[in-house]
Length: 112
Length: 115
Image (cartoon, rainbow over all chains, first blue to last red; front, side, top):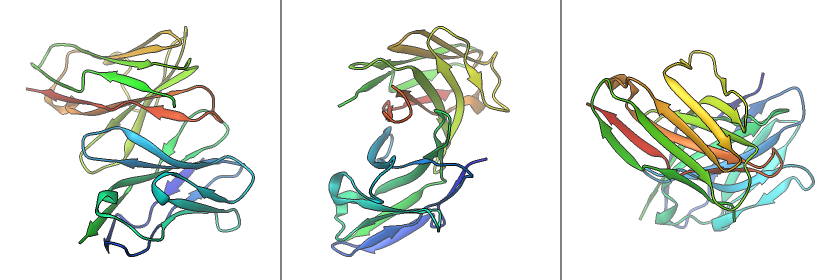
């Protein structure tokens, strides 16, 4: 069965610093991978997704993620964060069904 | 881009009453819609998957008689919380998909408070 692990529940970082949010998944088949951002009391917004092809995926707001099949990881990165990036970030995986399974989320807190 | 409209955004109801939440895909046909529940500071828990014209598939532990899901058309799914109790208070989010590779678009969520 598929599962998603986000090891860091909270990541504090200063503005303009780089950040990496970690995501690992377990699956025995090929998967689709997603990163979503959630602002308080709102739904989820898609940052980026990996379906196939290039392992480096670029998304909105300057975020990117790299799919590493051997390490079963899909870490999210941004070279320079802004205060407005403060939010909850969810990694998600879809296996061979339409179901989307979420990780537990990482709270990114950007300090001035 | 794809847009999913979810209403109401907030609702307060008395214990024992029923509440209906609507989820509409505005500019695409959603073959599948999903309903999630999110507790404070926690992840999204998938409650059920619904396909247009067929019965919803509920995840283990979700009471199908309490959380009624109707997917009458390719653009509308509704979740009705029947005989609501304070423990049903939560943030409910819907998601619509036009197919696995097409992606998933989320509604803005509904904050349900049962008093």
